[in-house]
Image (tube, rainbow, N blue to C red; front, side, top):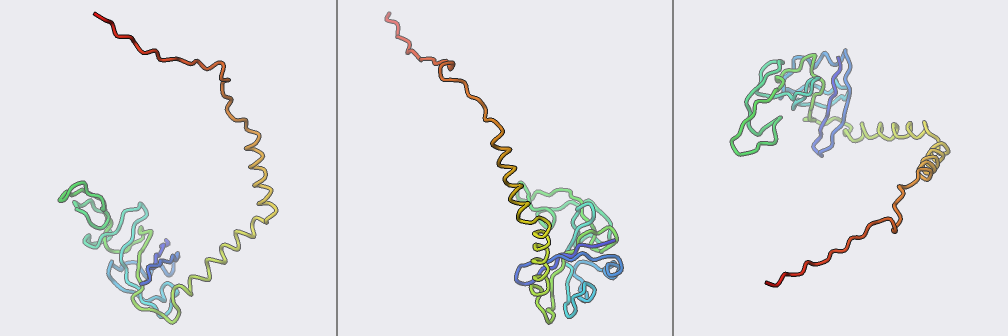
Length: 181
């Protein structure tokens, strides 16, 4: 069991953490709107509030649905349903309950209390390291040779041959003369 945690901050940025088995068990049973300590995610000093999530089939969690079951409810324009054809129309949609269980795949949280370091400082260092690893996998020489091969393949492909101008039939439109009666 693992959860993908989406952390949102007040600046509008979001960060992702994958939470594995031993730490993930601490979140089971919590509901939407409840708070938990950031040490569960490895972020000491932070406090997070659960705002939503989705299960392994992609159905969104809904605060009004009690428990962790999957339910089809009749809903208007709100969480999980954005497009409504006319004002007042409702649709029956499937939602997941408000309690975190084993089959929840993604949990959305916001930072209520900030720690000593900002989230940008904590997560900002990991992104450039990942980019460097990708660059190390393909040296510059291999990249340039791959580009050259693609260009050569394009040149080898012959463009569609067009019919010569002589073979094209030209039709002239002759205006019809009006009959005199």
